[in-house]
Amino acid sequence: MERTECLLIEDLRAGDMTALAVIVEKHKRHVYRLAFQITKNHEDANDVMQDTFLKVYESIHSFRKESAFETWLYRIVVNQAINLVKRRERRREAPLSGTTETQIRSELKRASNFRNNPHLSVERKELQRHVTQAVNSLPIKHRMVVILHEFEGLTHPKIASILNCSEGTVRSRLHYARKKLRERLKSYVELTNLSP
Amino acid sequence: MKPQCRSVQRYLSDYIDCTLSRGQTVAIAQHLGICRGCRKEVKSLRNTKALLHYYVPPTPPDGYDSLFWQQLQRVIEERPRPTWWRRLVESFLFVAGSPRIFDRCCFFLNSLIRHPVQWSWRWARLSPAYAVIFLVMLTTLLVYQGFQTSRNERLYPPGAPQFLNAPPSYHAHVEMDRNLVRDNLKKIATISPSSPNRFVHKTLRQSNLTDLTTEYLDWNGNPPTSGNDGEGLKEIITHDSSSDSLVFAQLSTPEPYLSREDYSQPLRAVINISYRFERKDNRSSSFTSGVLADVQLPDLSLEKIL
Image (cartoon, rainbow over all chains, first blue to last red; front, side, top):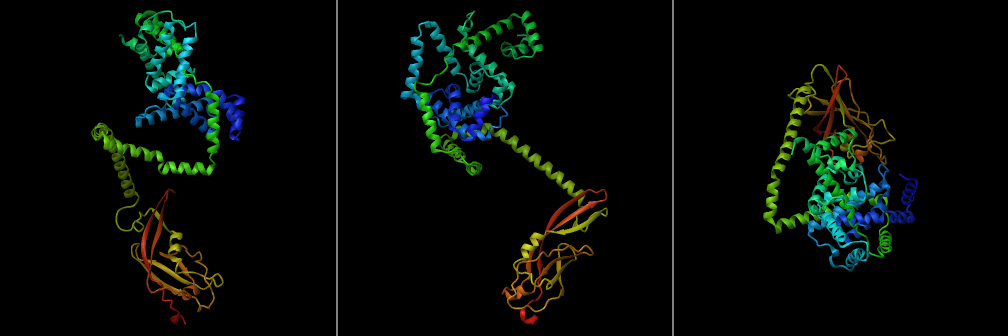
């Protein structure tokens, strides 16, 4: 663990809000991205993000530095997000963000990112849409492993620690997730010499 | 697909991530050199992995960052960091039955009422699992009980009082649970710290363990004086190792006379007796037995004493 991170944690334990602000600033992008990818909508991602940092603030005393702070933080995000998704599924609630202004703005921003970029060809935009859809359509267990491994760049042991499962389970889930993605993106996979 | 290919393909995902050991990587590379199907599989997995670079990560809307920090600050101000006692209460509430558990119960009942057929099917589907769990628990209980019975039979032969029927290789010591006797006698027996020599010496003589008789042995007291307040029961329980009698109470003189309780009725008390068996090989075992005994108090009426 970095020295600055240790100091930040000590300051946060002492109740320093500036330390919390630094931690939020440092990790908010990752936390939001992970929360959004699990919950699939902005409002829920916002709730998860808020609950996560609130829990960090309240439970920093219980962080024993056995793992990296990042792993601990991701574990909280994943737990909060899964709880929220399960609660929604159980109550069969529709996501709150379906028609909210924030969601519309978010979607518009994503759409404009595609539109305003002259380097993106139509095919490339179409490919991005397909890949995003394919990842989002994976079951939550597989999706989480793919997100943490491919997009967050975490190693198998870290992912196992975050998801509270064995390394073998992580490998197996990643393998099956890739096979499912291959099926769903079959037409693109068959093309050779792909360059990202 | 060949059996070898099937076992290799399980590791192909790790192979393209380069997370296999050196030996495994070499073995798979050798196999890929001779197997066209597996080479095709690796290529398609690599292409899939490469395609994920086209994934568009979600980005928060404009102005969200500052808005989020304001929200978080507001929430923290409204809900200050829990103190240790609050954490304790919260964990207690969680264990005792949190709103979440209540919520789950409500949800379960609601679903059962609204979709009885679906839930019945769900229970029926899970019934083998419940049956297995029940059988495992029952077997464990029976095995444990059988083990306990055989152990007791081995240590304490069946028959009336095990203390008396102890195997000859055991030496028996009898100890009494002092607190219990003291608590039961406290109401009627007090001793004055100013006159510690005044006491009634009561002895329990045991004819056998289930039929305790009492015998009034001695009375060294003088008539009580007025205004001599008693102050609780003195430490009175002793162990008489010289015989089979148990000295268990020394009663005070003044206080019982000054109080107006009825001593004509016997005192019913549960006396716990702990038995400890020491074997010659220095191994010991113990158990506790409760005996309900009616202790007849001596006639301590003021008129008779005077």
